[in-house]
Figure 1 (cartoon, rainbow, N blue to C red):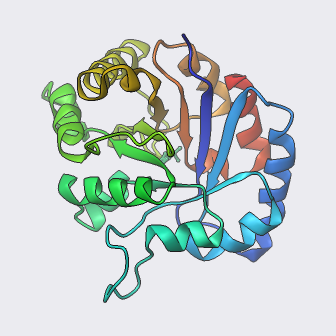
Figure 2: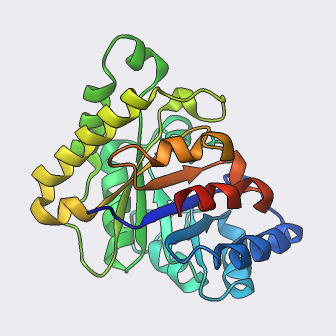
Length: 247
Ligand code: 13P
């Protein structure tokens, strides 16, 4: 059975208070597509204002600290995200795995912390160009899943996996249909192994240069249950056609 698609925007380090109008436009337009779950993951400092601006629409964070609280200067806990009005968070994005040297162990701890307070989680995995070229894409992603998936999937919060090949992020390049299908099938098999029946309900998103022009083709692939969208999520005019393609 097909899962309800999730189209989530990752605003990365973009967005000021003046962009809250764009959040409002996106949230209002998303109401026309009740068959799709739509979310925007905005910079931490915008979460509270965005959540207040669009009650009922899913606003998320882009990262979370694994600890409940403590001496972690500059970090945000899961409960803080929730308290600010977030209903989900991204964890393990490749830009953090690279720049902040986040390990699978840390990504797993962040995921478990977020799920434990009831936040939904989009856990990112994806191979480098070097790994893809030497034929190690599946092994790389399998190892990331083995290291970063939570021990259990709590039924009060939801887990989604975003497959984002690093070389497709912000480059305009995307894998072939077959490459996406094979990777999503492998991720699904891993999820079933790990969580049995519950593994069939975990959504697997594709991310990396998703645009209105390629979205329909990507959403038609088996086990693609949505998208994590970067650049094309910043403006309603680019993002809403992607939501429409998912509906
Ligand atoms: P782009 O859609 O800009 O390629 O970014 C993808 C991404 O990293 C989403 O998390």
